[in-house]
Length: 541
Image 1 (cartoon, rainbow, N blue to C red):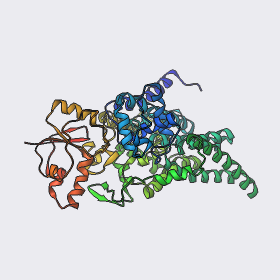
Image 2: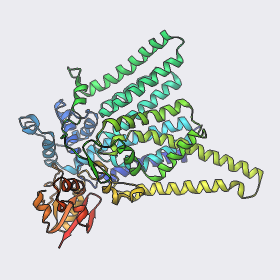
Image 3: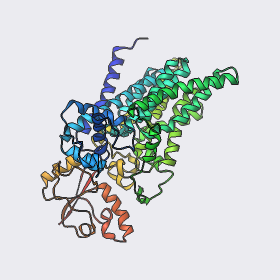
């Protein structure tokens, strides 16, 4: 059945919203912490042909971010000692690279590929949901994705999380299509996108055992005997592996040392200090908490989505959600396995580490909602034929009104958060304004608010600043009166201060470590103003 004009227009509008929200929101922000190295790294990869900077992450996202910069004139000194040695420092080089160019132009161009990847992810959600559950589910999937604060937040910045989320989901989609059609072309497509995922972020390797397990089950069901199982598994596994490897190998610029990916894996967290403190609900730990990502998910996901997700799982267990086993496995196993492995292996610094589970859960929820709406419609028509009394259709109207309320609530979560999607928290913890009491780092503040800090200082020139991000572009944004963070400046404050939230949170730990209550500003003082959720303003008259 051909798509109606209204349906096509709705898809286009939702995809446009998926792009426009992070695009316009991102214009408000200076470089987030990791962008200081990601963007310059990508440019140097293309310019020099060397993957010299930032080996802690695969190169694809950085290359994508660097490509638009080829269209403009960039000041790049390849003889800079922080790049070529002997004072090699990717962060210091990145800061100098950004400050010697037009940062605003660089950010707009470099972030554009990430925003487009987000649109690609939304389109594949629409495609998969439509094929698995029907057209209504496809629209619901884009709708849910377009207004999910966490997805919008990380579509704004040059980081790896949207890319690995997109390419992993697309790889699974084509593997699902291979199971449905047995066309080798779908297996090749799956291998391509699996390779792109592996070239985006090292955490993509978590999906490898899931893919291998699915493939084994497929050949076991399709093959006639054990020999056929072994033969087909080797053939299909070789196709998938060869295609994925070629993609990754090419994006690493065909290195001679074939252990290049293993070396990259070993460099993850290599620049972390052993005494790094993680933060959760006012407590600090160098080891983290096994339930960190579960709590982060529950606090930073809109409540309407959590309600529908719970209803979907309940219906599935009660066998009221019509979902065959293969579809169930493809939607839930990757998300569950990724969550478990991330919980065990990853540092407790941000919900973005589990961002790849969101697309799978959105598909799961969109399928449930489409079936629920359809069943209610059928029930209403059936009851109307049986009786003209209102009572038989009362349940329908109540549920329809509930879904309407949840939809409005859900959309308002994104609309009212603009442009501060990064520090979004739901109402269970009192909203975004209380987020600092529970989580830290990329969950709230990532050094991205220097533009608004500059504007605040223009209006309040007497404002001093205390900022903990070592490589923030303070001079470029003309941030003045920056005070060195030390015991004296914290124990005896005078005048007006703007203090970044990441610093305030870790001052709690420093206060406990040094047994000095004067360091704990969050407990001692009440801010008179805020800049987004990134800076608290204190006035010591």
